Image (cartoon, rainbow, N blue to C red; front, side, top):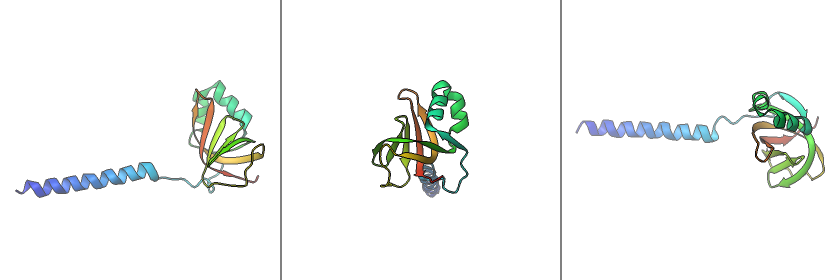
Length: 130
């Protein structure tokens, strides 16, 4: 009978660690890019060219870093803005003042490159005025 309380306590401890770990991975560690220094300021055409010519070196250079990209808005779909048909930016807050064919500078975190669709993906994006 003494093993039962130990087993229950062990299961509860594992459950707490599991839930805490899941919440940290899924929701924790969110960065505030507005307070972080921009690692790179690039045009959309130059970063697209870099990724299409050498994915590995571009990933090492840009992945998980805050960058500012200048380009033309080619599509807006909810909280996603597409720049020059190849850069998909997920906005942190929906901004209604963005229109297609507008020249913008967007700051965001590079989360990857889809070589099949030839698209660069950014998240936590917002418009900056530089």
